[in-house]
Structure formats: structure tokens, C-alpha cells
Length: 211
Image (tube, rainbow, N blue to C red; front, side, top):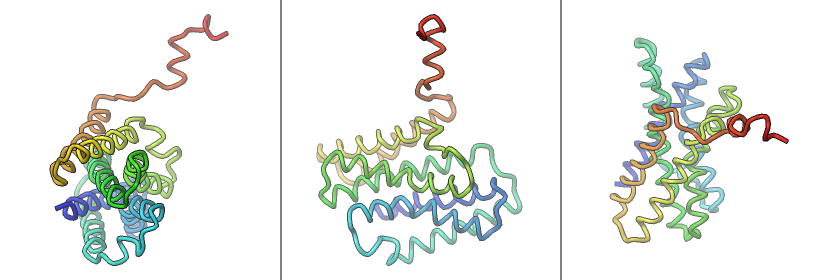
């Protein structure tokens, strides 16, 4: 069940890579490059840190097939239909929610400490988005512009670790934690939520307090 959930998250990230390439006016090859970059970068970074060999995607033909099919399918969709409003943010949130949880599970299975589990969950969730945005020429990446992006992943990693420690089954724990990440991310998108920025804090203090 977790593998099926992971394929769903990878598919969402593959679609987000193509959508980002579309917005950056890239050609179909660029779309496929971003589909793969967004889909496998987080898991690759996680496996390298955990010293897991071989890398998970090098022997999973189903996963690679899903990325290719979703990438080509998304490009075909964009050829005939208009890009839906906020579609990139929605599919990105789906990918973030699922891949974060899978990252936490992989870290637990590898015997990582609780803090390392949370760190690896966040890295697995956000690395693909960072690389995708950098390849698109977006500076700073979404992660550094939207505070609730990494915080959503952090919350989801903590949630999964807590549910695991409480003895919750793998599938319910994954579903609940992924739902928490998705709800936080989309809530931030539609409600415009973010942490206070330094310039906002300075404006609240007022010029008389700046000295």
C-alpha cells in the first residue's frame, strides 16, 4: 500500500515538473527533465544520506514508467487545454504530502534517530521542488518564498513519527500525516498564510523603536 501511495506522490511531482517547465516556456525534453528532477531528487538525496545502495529508482521500472507516462500525459493535456489556475501549487502539495511521509518511513526503517527522521522527511519532501525551481530559473525557490512549505513537511514528519511511536498502522499513519501536510500547504495557499517576515516585524515596531 505504501508503494502505491509513493507512486501517487511521484506522479504528482512529475506533473508539477512539467507544469513548471510549461510556465518557463521549455520544450518537451525540458518538461521530461523537470519531471524526473522533481520526482526522484528528494528520494535520491535521502538514500545517499542513509547510504542505501542501489538507489531506489534504479531498479524500480514501475516508478520510472509512471514518471514518463505522467510527464508525457501532462504535456499532451497542456497542448489542448488551458493550464488550470493554481494547478502547479495543488499537484506540488500532493507530491509534498506523500513524499514527505515516505521519507519519514524510510528513515525509520533505516534506524535513524527521531530528529534524523524528521530532517530526512523534510529533505525528501522539498529537495525535488528546490531543484525544479532552480532549473526553471526561479530565485529564490518556492521553499524560500513560502514559509508554510517546509513547515508543512516538518509537521507531517513529526506527525508520522508520533503515530508510529503510538503503534498506529503504517497505512493509517501515512494517510493521516499526508493529509496534515496537504491541508497545511493548501490552507496557506488559499488563505495567504505565512510566517512574519523581518520587514513586517520592523514595520510593526515602528521607526521610533528601530534605534
